[in-house]
Length: 429
Image 1: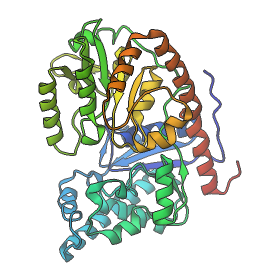
Image 2: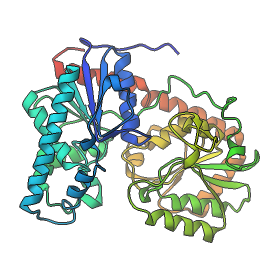
Image 3: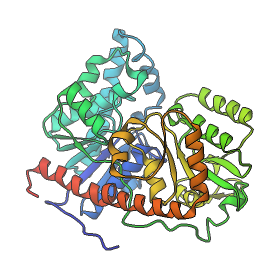
Image 4: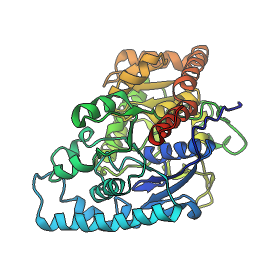
């Protein structure tokens, strides 16, 4: 498909900053999409993070920016779950902040940056010193900034009790001139206004719907066999990390109640950074349910290739075309990348009615198997019926893809990013 590339104003040198740009977490994926879109518009993009897989010619690795850096992790353990902190903890926060400011200034000067895009580091306090450093550098330089917020502190229970409320008010998010705040859903927009009196724009998560997926090809044709599935098995895909908020226990319950020996649940991602108790609970549920579940994270990566044993590594784009159904029973999501992926690959999807889906996505007319916090007889019956009805699957796929193209394509982000840059530089559209 031919693209209309929108460019407003002069080309800019834009710096993306976060704790990590590595792997397939939502912040990394969306940042890469934005960078691709901005590059198409004529801008130059550069990267700074503690864990980074961008080309060295356009990036600055700052190990202390990684939220799992030992010094950072040790300080962070004192900041939440208590209402006071010691003077020594304050001193260490300030010391880390100053060192991180040195990294930020080095990044800005090395690449002569004209616009900054802090990715989530002014929203969720996973790395308090980095957020403080970022806010101070913006205040000191006056550089135009698009602060891209994916998750806020108030959205996560572990950040409710805090000994750093003074820092949270100062930098999470920062209220400074020349910052355009961008959120990914209307609930976040309303809460940001209510709690912080800050206006914001919504740029939802997007996918490149203008370029249809390639599907099954010579490389990925053997994926089912490689993960131990037969051609006539029902490939039920859970395409998320294994963390509690993903509600994977509901996918297990659905497969159990389908009572079909062909139904195999495939979990594509590894456990996240929120502890191992949840995956242990899931393994116990799987044993009790007596269903076939395949954990294939060791076979899925960012790029095609081989592992140390010589086995093929597939991408998510290789996995989705083989799925018969996608399960997305999350209790909470900032937006919902896996939902967009499912409709992009034209797959039927079961979705739990999490708040952002109910508010921002479902009203647009998407066709899904809906559930509300539990797998009912009706949910099971509708799933069975859809799996048996190829005509309805195709009808839903067509409707959903067209809606994705209209509301969540790169064209949407391209237009909204152009407007944000125009606002920052006083350029008319």
